[in-house]
Length: 100
Image (tube, rainbow, N blue to C red):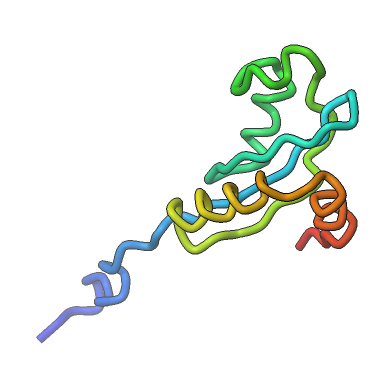
């Protein structure tokens, strides 16, 4: 017999952390692609000049695209696909992006 004070069985199931692939616009207009479990925090790190050497030459200006992935592995896979795209295709992703 279980008491009401015990955790329900579903509370014992670990919740997997969400991972995201994201694009950041640099001051020179280029797009940087990366992954993170918290893209807003990661963007703030990029803005502070830390987190990626990419932004040493041109500061991070805007987080312009995020896409939730199933897990870190899926985010890495999606990042590789996006990095292979031409800039025009990346710009289409940015143009079609609708934040939640």
